[in-house]
Each structure stands twice: as C-alpha cells, then as structure tokens.
Length: 403
Image 1: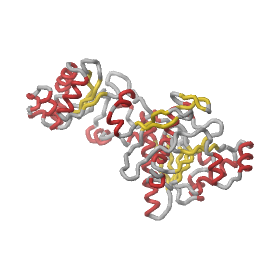
Image 2 (image 1 turned 90 degrees about the vertical axis):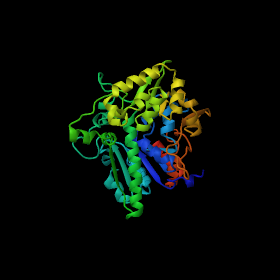
Image 3 (image 1 turned 90 degrees about the horizontal axis):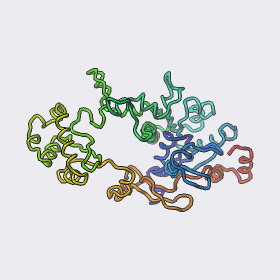
C-alpha cells in the first residue's frame, strides 16, 4: 500500500535510543508509517547491531535482530559530544512530533537536549522518556535494565516453580512491555495535542512500572487479604484447569479448560462424564479446590496419547489446546502463514530471509516493512541535505568528527 495511507504517515520521530526499550518503541511507530530518524554514535552505533546471532555484511557482522529492530528507520550518525552535533540534533527536533530517548535521567539535560530545551524550540513536542525507574523519585538516577524492571515490578517473583529460585522468560520482556507503553503514551499525547490546544508533553515510562502495570490482581489481593502470590510453575494460579502436560511421545502442550462449559466438554471428550456432571466442578472455585485431582486426570489422559491425538480430541471438543511452539513449528504452521506473520525480506547481500510480521492488523491502514535495519549512518547525508546542509559542508562535518 502507499506509504501515505499508513496511519502515522507524516509523523516525524527522532530517536535517541539504544538496545531495546527506546528503539522498540520507535520501531512500532515506524511500522505504521512514521518517519523515524535514529541518532547513532559515529563508528559505533546502537550496541544491538552486535547482539545475538550475527550475519556478515559490508559493515563486518550485523545482528539479525538489528534488521528487525531497526526496520523502517533512517540511521543518522551524530557526535553528541560535539557542539555542532548538538546543533544538528536540535534542528532535527525543531519540526519533530515525537522524541524517544532511553538514557538515564539527566543525560539528555547534560547534552542540552532535555525537555526544557527542546520544548522551548518546539512547543508541540511529545517526548517519550523510558528509563529504569522514571524521571523522579529516589532511584531515578540509578541504572536500570529490563531485568531489574522485571524483578522490581513483580514478574520475576511469580515466575518459575515453588521449589526453585525465580526464573526469567527467554526474552527481554520488561524492555518490550515498556516500549509498548511508550508507544501508546506517545499516541495519546499526540491525540491530546491535536484536539486540546496543540501543546506537547512528556511521556514518562519507568521499566519497573511498565511491568508492575501488568501484574493483574496482585495489589488488591495483598492489600485486602494479605495474600502474596508465589511461584506456581506452569499452573495458572486460582484458575483451573490451565496447565502444561506431557504426551506419550514426549511433547509438551497446553490445555486450557478453565471455562465452565469448556471443562464439561473436555471431561466428556476424555470419557470422564462423572466429572463433567459433578456439580462441585461446575464453577472455577469448585474446580480450583480440587485442582490436584483434576490435573491428575488430565495428566494421565495426555500421557496416554500422542500429541496429534490430544490436539485432535481437544479441537473436536472445542477445548483450547496447543503444542508449545519452537521457531521451527512457527515456520510450518498454517495459522502463522495465512496471517502473514513471517514476512520475506532481503539481507544486504540479496539473500531472502524471514522477519516477524506486523502487529496489530489494521484493516484499512495496515503497517508494513519498507526496509530492514539500515547500515550505520546510511541516511546521514540525505537527512542533513534536507536540513539545508550543502555537500561540501557535510564533507567538513565528517572530517571534523561531527557525523
């Protein structure tokens, strides 16, 4: 589709971000048409360019993750320790709609790029500030990564099994959750600017608060009952049955039969009409009181069948169930393929490869991938040219170490 039809076409974003939270926030905006100019340090760039699995490119080796995290962005190299680099940054912000940054609080101010300085030259600016602990409070100046946010926000405490130390999920979920809140906050601030006076504002996202906001009923349960949620392994606490089970052929899958009608259908499908008709099990509270018994029944049924048979029976009974997908499973699954969740793109050497599709799916103005993460500084001359810098001046700026 035409770029002009994307929902954020015409929105300009300047990103001062590295690694995950800030760059993921602006990536979401870029996927739906925003012009995102990513500021990177000359000769270094975002450290994410060298994280995880690397692929040989003209830059040496580049992270495959970078190609996704940097998609649709323009890379401009600027030395923010040089006065002329700061001046270029200010020129970029002057007509921007959104600035995204995830430095420790105070860093942007030391650079002369804090809220007071930037809003003075652009009163309509929305500034998304992602940090470990937010812009205020006794911990504001401390460094904080996603792992710290997950720990302080409560997620790590409840993740894992009761007889073992807390564990993490296999991805940087704290950073990603914060990025989503940041993108949502940016869009709400833009909406406010459009309909209520035209002024911008700060969107202050703390990683620990972003995680904390996802912790369901944890707060009122503790405050009202003094109940502290603990680690419960693969069981969904207080919601029965929803658990992981192992099949006869050694595969792991999830069965979620915690709806009243769904539970009855599952019990009938596996030949336990007595449990389906048991009035004590007609509600979640009754099932949860007999969780051990119910899980024993489902464990035995799953263990007596191969994965294919379990999933077929569950599907026929309209009971939610799924194998636990690996990347290999996703590449062959019809649902992933029909929904275009595996897009084909081209690596810098021309080789085709797959990247994740765009979420969410908008029916009239869908997002898309215009290009993968660019080479370091790939758009510097183009962007500076649009700011009015002639070619000879750009050559000088490069020789002086500004860009």
